Image 1 (tube, rainbow, N blue to C red):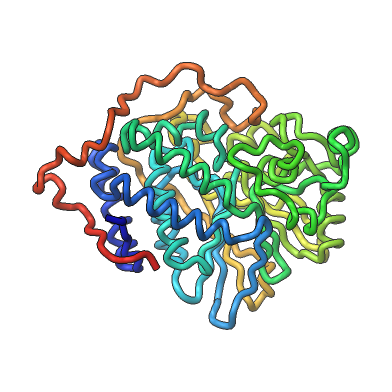
Image 2 (tube, rainbow, N blue to C red; image 1 turned 180 degrees about the vertical axis):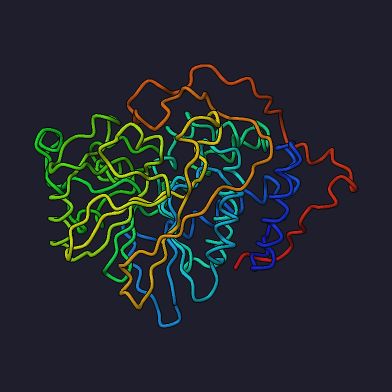
Length: 417
């Protein structure tokens, strides 16, 4: 019998409540009582189908009913903080458009819960929820920074080995960037190189790409390596702004480019864009680049070009990374989201900072010394060689639960809309 999901607002509210309550039980494998493996497969399949319909560069034109657009940066499995963000900003409902700018999973302990919540909203209202790809929606990062293991723990090896490739397929269908009302460009890492250059030219004498290049580019596959057909995808996911003029290979990460204010100005003037919102860097990354503005409040302006426009960084995971010692100053950041409104032509960001929600005890799914701030890209040798000692179990344990034990189970018995 085909699994069906009743994706109404009420159902999603009930799902998020059940998922949040389960995080406090300290038994992550109970998650599949709430959304079992077959239902998770269905959700991934439906979301992947919606995302596949969207182009590499998604052009969004709002209707008269849209009163605001909420942009969210990296969330990294910090589920409780995202629920708080929804309380402050409002949920993805009529009149409000959401753009999530990648890095939904890894490092935090609840990437599965966060991902499935966002996918439910996407499938429920695909025109009201934009999910852009981040560098952590890739095979390389999810192998290194915890999401693959988290999935195995919460669903067991048998189901996890089926769900993980479906997750990667879904990621490969995500758009890389969004242009809102021809005014604001939103993308995870940053600007990118021209597709007209040879491999050697692109590395030694890079030339700035255009939105036309991005529209025609590949979404990158499961693991964009930043070369050949995946060059633009790798750049969009991994690039960083710098404080001095210039366009060069991003040696810090081994993938993507670094670009200065002059290059941002060139791009914005040519494409007639007034605002660029990117994410990708948290307080740990900026700690290693003190010449750049602080991201400790979740938002900063990196390139202020006056009347031409501005390029900003947005980070939405407070008190990050979750498993770093609490006395580390990089661990005490606030997060932010940005609101864009028609009254200011969709290009004047209104940041709102917020503090973290106290977290229940949880386990870490990755090696803490594994390239802390994404300092190495997919060509590096930091992939884990030895598994963490986490009992991921075998098979679907749902068959052994009693009726009383599964009393909080959500009944899923309607068609996906």
